[in-house]
Amino acid sequence: MTDVKDLESRDYDVNDIVEDKRFIRCKKEMWMIVVFGLIQILVPAAIIYSLNGNGKWFLGLPMWYGVATVFYLCMSLICMVVATKVIRTHKLDAVADDKEEK
Image (cartoon, rainbow, N blue to C red; front, side, top):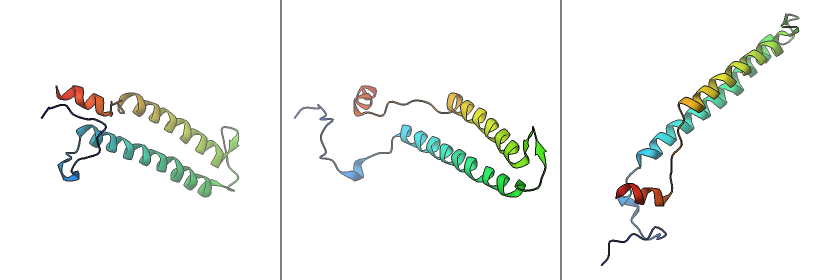
């Protein structure tokens, strides 16, 4: 019998699969992105509904619009920093896994 792995084979036992550390990292990054997305939906909604119709102005705009704009600009900067400093690229294909084992 040879030790050559058939990377296209689907004949394996699911219980023999060991969780790859790269997938754990990717899962954390995915949840971080989901949380940032929810923040960008919920916080401006609260800002808009709480400041709408109060008659005040901010930066020449209605208060709700000006504050929401500043919030989105800040979140854009935060997301760019997270994308460049925190999130890493990974090779997740089977060929990369086979090369790392040797």
